[in-house]
Length: 249
Ligand code: ADP
Ligand code: MG
Image (cartoon, rainbow, N blue to C red; front, side, top):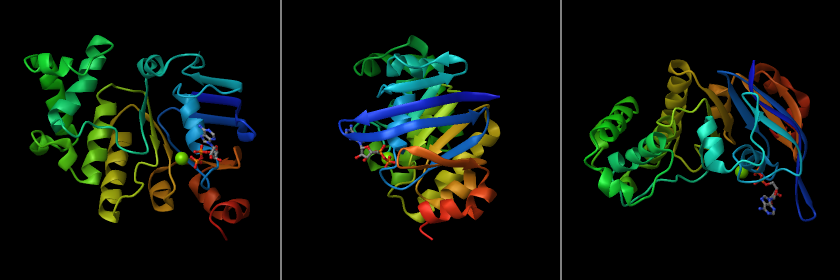
């Protein structure tokens, strides 16, 4: 049963056909990696899934409902949460305050940043945020400013912020980009744990083959805006077309 169905999606930027005839089917509870060289259209595709871009052609169905034409916050409320290429956390707020933002958004459907000040006394939000920090193994860091976290912990916090919205599909765009190996390995372990323990589907765009082959049970290779092949990791590793187009062999 697939939770996400992308059919014949195309997207053009001026003279550049960034995506053409993209078909992608993501099975519920799988970890599906989308790989491909720089400029292949991976982030563009992700942007089409979350409402940041509207494709010129094709359809995107999530759990049987079209996401096209919906605003990003509506798509988020449908159950799709996204981790961006660069961490989107508030450096001046503490780890706990950061975590309270999506908890508040989940409860109230929307939030304003200055609502954080008035929410400080709201026990249910604080409890939920603290609970999430325990799950993320970050409870001891809850009073630190988010800006002072390591790169890996910033990512961990951000992933936790997404999970507190209880998404059914978690999208990640190169979550380990620019990370040292130790932080990368921590992120791999965290994503494995999330996938094992939660009723969640993960779609991950990733450049680092170590991350891809550690996590994915399905891989789509995108090249020049169109899927080259979709298969399980073993077959992708052995596919001569993939080795040539992507692994550079
Ligand atoms: P990837 O994430 O696989 O590296 P992108 O989806 O970011 O690739 O980009 C695909 C192609 O589309 C690239 O050639 C890029 O320069 C181009 N592109 C991406 N976003 C825009 C935009 N907003 N305007 C114009 N061109 C864009
Ligand atoms: Mg990209």
